[in-house]
Length: 191
Image (cartoon, rainbow, N blue to C red; front, side, top):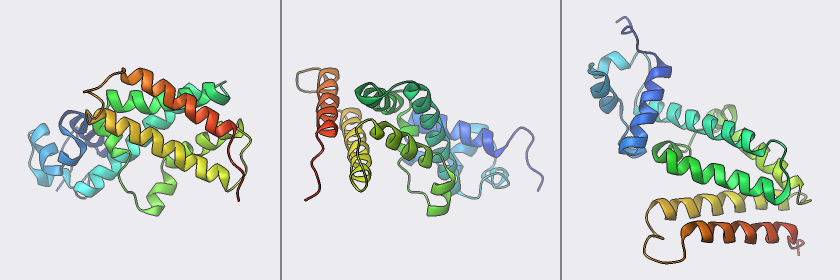
């Protein structure tokens, strides 16, 4: 069967990412995408293998978009300024693109992960941490800490977990970043 005119893997991925933002990443399927294009599901299989392939493509797109934003935000910054810029990229992206942000957490096979923009995220985070003078394995621990705090805070905030109490979440976010900066500057030595 010849591919349908106008349908490409890239276009399906982009529309799939938009769909994820509208209905949630977990709801994205080849069938739902076919409904969006008003085509039969079979016409999409010459472009994407299945829903897992579609979700992988959306995850790679989201990681690339996040990496591009992070690179722009980090340019010329160091120390706490870089830390805040990187943290805000993740938080802002999650607010603007909740489905894509969820896609960025999608488990990729090791080969796909190594070929994707996740490696850029790690490099940028490690570059940011050079301003805190951390050696290995502390640098790896700090990368994991930052990822956990950014993702944890954003996930709770996006899920409405902070909606019912004061102070404002922006104030708390600023305090969290202040605390991370202090921790990174005074990182404890290994026992």
